[in-house]
Length: 171
Ligand code: SF4
Image 1 (cartoon, rainbow, N blue to C red):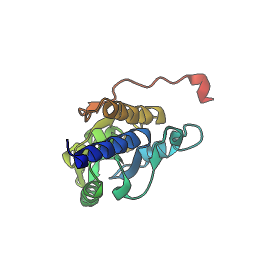
Image 2: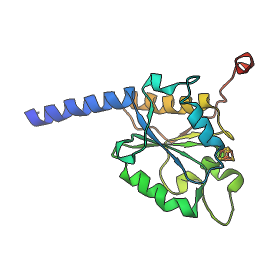
Image 3: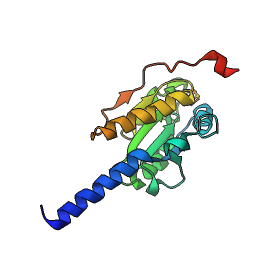
Image 4: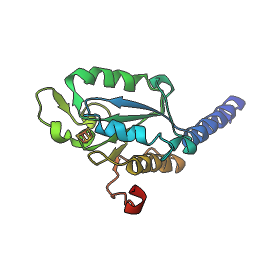
């Protein structure tokens, strides 16, 4: 192995380690009713506080590792969604949040809806629910990171297990 190749391998290892320990995410609403978006924002509140795991929501696709998208894809949002996805550096990952992002949900078949997210961009993790709870969204991110830790790109997966909630915590 040449000195350059060795150096590149070390840099790639450091980049991968950083990505796993502090993935930066961008949020995009491609036609959601806002229910799922509110749950994503709830994950940032002190109650769930995803930043303690290093997960940081930020605004530029050029700095994002993960695209967290909600809603079905509308005709109006399709081009913007593709543009945001294309601006993200490789390797990039997509988490589809909510039933509408999985299947079009209640908006499926509407005149202005293209369909679910995977019709427009590749999706790595699907988090079902209408809307999914913050725990389910965090679990989706963790599943993605587990795959990266294992050194592989995730097979497209659906977080099918309901996330159980202790009702007493709800009060
Ligand atoms: S899954 Fe439910 S909450 Fe989320 S965008 Fe669709 S209708 Fe709204």
